[in-house]
Amino acid sequence: MRKYEGVFIFVPSLEEENRNQLLDRLKGIIEADGTITNVDEWGMRKLAYEINDLTEGYYIIVNFESTPETVGELDRVCKISDSIMRHMIVREDE
Image 1: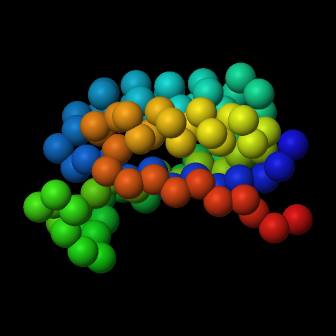
Image 2 (image 1 turned 90 degrees about the horizontal axis):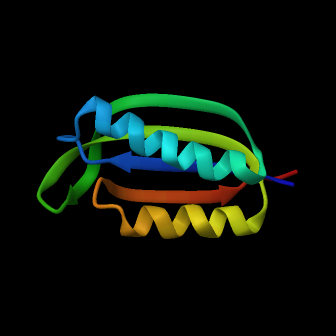
């Protein structure tokens, strides 16, 4: 198992219920093969630059331990989801 940190920026107009459903889906993917160590919701933040005419996003940081295959699946789901503007998953140092 390797340690990872995922940053997910959701569309600001997304309702809380829909955002929580998508976050639960992401958590389910992680927990299928690993464990979540921390979930930190930063909330609405101003973006450094406009993305698709949007200046704000809803940030959620997830620290987890899992396999590289799980990270690939998370990346795939984030890319096809219209509700996630940007995401980044990085491996933490040992």
